[in-house]
Image (cartoon, rainbow, N blue to C red; front, side, top):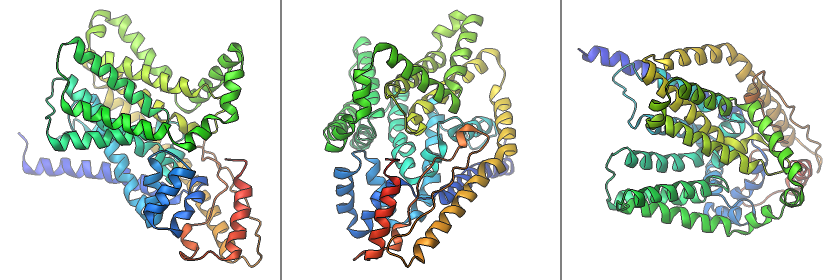
Amino acid sequence: MHTAKSYRKTYYVWAALCLTYIFFIALLSALFPYGVDEYFADLSTLRKTLDAVIYAHKNINQRIGVFYGVTVLCCGKWLFVLLNPLVQLFLCNTFFYFIFLRRPDFKSFKDIPIFGCLLLLSFMAVPAPSETLFWIGGAVNYSWHMVSFMIILCVLRAAAGGITVKDGRRNILLLALAGFATGMSNENNAPMALIICAGFWALFIFNKKRAPLWFYGILAGIAAGLAITFGSGTLQQRLTHYSFESFRSASLEMKLLFHLNHFHDLLADTLLPVITPALAAFALAQNFKTAVKNTDFLLAVLCWAISMVLAFVLFMAPSVGSMRIFYSAGVFAFLAFMLAVKFLRDIYGINFFRYLFAGLGIVFIVMLPLIVLPYFNLHGQNAARVALLRTAKAPVVKIPPLTVVGCPWPNFTIAYYDGIYSPRFAPRNKIPAKVEAVRGTIASLIAPVI
């Protein structure tokens, strides 16, 4: 029998787990310097927020992440440090709901190992976490995008699992907005979301059921977001990039070589795309009839397939500038992994999540100094460059590049950025000629990166 005292102890443990995660994400978000995207978004301090957003959308990036990023930059980095941990924590809650079709039980300890695994895997199992979780430009364009996508997936999963989702105006409006945000997310997530909805629609037709109104709200939102994203001039410029032309003109053997090379790079960041099918093959070998009829197993296979499609579409590029583009593929890979572990737990009656959480926790604690100290190093280098810019007397200042500081764990290799100074250093009404000259120097430095 649970008492108020036992519930209080449980809440303390849950609070400690979540607050530790929030502090970790906030710390690394504060330490990570501005990057290339923030240099261009520096124009946001010279205009009103809405004007800056429109300018950035037309000239820099067609994704909805630019709306998030420019707004955050207009307020200051403190807002990103405040919001980012909460966004990441909410995202982990959506992962939990997608896997278990319920919210975590905060009144007991049974879900702590599972939720702890999700918190650890949310940055240990995704490609380039430094660029997708802790860097402003990366977070708003990758992990923040995933929130609206996961909300849609959770609703579809609930409907498929027999949970009634009401057709109220509020639900229709909110899901339409989530669909619109997903449609404007990026060139990879948006088409995949539309394909998933199309498959769900086909399921309605096959079962001879009427699709609810909120489902059409999602479809309309995704379609509208896709139209704006793929109709923008900035995306057209990207599609005419030489890398796409190189792929189109390459031979079949060369295209295959591109894929093999990039798949090797993906496995260097996360092994889950290989571990999950190995678990699935083991489950099939042990109990084929149960596996092919089990919802968790089939959903794990589907998530793995989605992960591979998202990855292989990106493999078409002759060169991949950064592993952050595989973030969505990494998320679906670790969702497939968690679903496979859940299936094995239910089949064998062994709580594998406890052992997984213990193993991941030990590795994380042992590696923690090696993970965090490079971020302090990077922050110190950037602070020195900012001080150089503040005290510069010459019109043009030679800015030392940031040193690449890698961790033993490939996932935690800090990406190379040529760095910029904070947008707050320049007056809002007029930029001095000295600062303009420094801007030109920075632009020439980061040109090869772009």
